[in-house]
Amino acid sequence: MFDGFSFSVIGASHETSGLVCQDYSSFEVNEYYSVAAIADGHGSKKYFRSHLGSQFAVEAAFETVRHFYENPEHFEQNFPANHKLILKNMKKQIIANWNKRVQEHLEKNPVRLAETQKFTKEEFKEIPKESYYGTTLIVAVCGRGFQFGLQIGDGSLVAIFDDGVPVMPMIYDESAPANMTASMCNRNAVAMFNSFYVENKKMLAMFASSDGLYTSFSNEDDFLEYHLIISSQLDNLDAFSQAVKKNLTKRSHFGTEDDISLACICDREQLNDHVGLLKGKVEDLKANAAERRAARIAAMKNTET
Image (cartoon, rainbow, N blue to C red; front, side, top):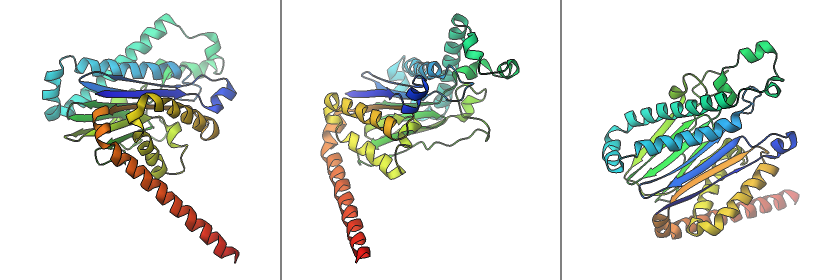
């Protein structure tokens, strides 16, 4: 049985400056698949509706996945052999669904004078309308027998399979020119997507997060270990998920000060079967950390003498 959670918390810098949270996250589960998505609206002034763009991106992703799963049995039979083509079509559909939402919102909510005051008339004329809503997007999907993901822009996707080792199967690769942000609002956005596909592996959990979470850690190893620790507690998801939200809030206020989103999907049956493995790996992490602390203390004492 699939399950999950999602949280988006506002960063301290946004609270101080009076900005709204520009992140958006959500998850969805049913008997055929689970999907988690996060989007991080851009912070530059020309993306002044990016908090809406991030919501539209997640909604567009979910609409796309539902469409492709309209006939679940057919999709499950066809996808493995044709996943490259289907993933490309998914990217196109997500962009189309997002642009549709942007256009509908603009028609119902024309740009207000207050939104243009930071620009000269010449500057504002140069901004494409889609850029008002610019955002990144990460989507993680676990189906029956395969997993896949899509990403445009920064952020991270972490997967934990039945070996209990957290991995990032889709490393962020900025394919845009140096002066351009990889974004849903770009005209060549489809070409800026990364993707991955895995089959015949037992997925325990997958996580999508905005870059505010990654930058709250000192290195990639600590970041991956964080996901292992969370996974080891997902057998008690209902009680534990609120602790995750508190930790994200703490990290957003005393670490990166940026908005943070984390969305998770998991397989409860697989987690129950492998929870001992996960908890054992966490205990190993604690033991290794204790050894490193002891070694540092000993080194300091030797230096003092």
